[in-house]
Image (cartoon, rainbow, N blue to C red; front, side, top):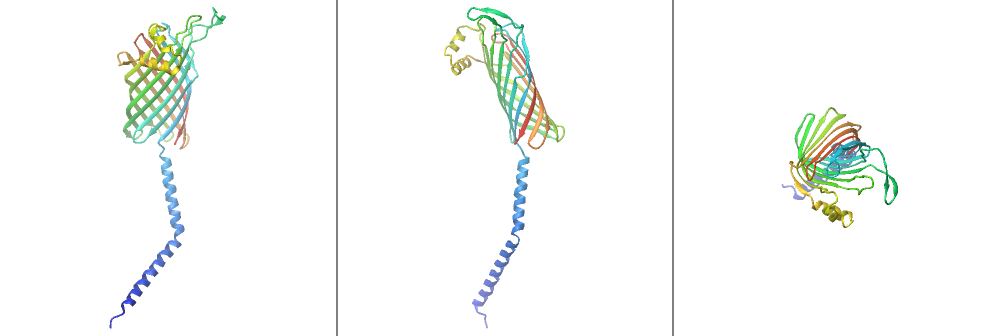
Length: 304
């Protein structure tokens, strides 16, 4: 005699309900275990992500020396050591390497001791030193072509930008204020050598491919000069000067930028270090211009 179909369904339903109860009971009993494993996995993943720091921000301050001869203004070489040199850098290393820098330097060189002179307007005055204000802002982008053992090499391009404003003071005479403005594209090389887990070295090299340069005319205050400054508005005056610039190749404009940096790892977020910077700038139009700058920085770095 055949068993009722309803009885068979009862057995299957009963087994299914009991299975559900066992599964739910198992999950409830092991909820703490699963919760702990999930939290541990999430916490470990977070730690791994934190260890892979790709961004760095660095503040640098140091003593610098400048040597400049601008024959548009003077045949003499003006040089000085000065403590006002500040460099801010941001770097990011992931699929591509990026480096952004802003540097400001102030020098007040003089080739004579302080002297007195008689001014038609102000009577007896004391001569003051010249003033050189240097602003550099650069952005480099490159890709690693070597990453083996302790060595890492990045090759790319750099947007190089300089605004050098100067005031030459020659007693009671009119004070020429020539500007040197340069926008250029450089070949960029970045090399890193890791000595051990605490010590490392970095170096950057920039060589110009081409430059767009404005320099004051040979007669520092000729018609072009007065046309540029007639508005007496800073931005418009600057724009007028830039419009008078020229595209120059290696023949008329030579530039060499080099730095080497030593870093010491304090912990996973902070480094300290030393940096030496060398900048050579030569230009032949409209007159010979030579500038050599050496700066020794101390720095602190934040990694995130």
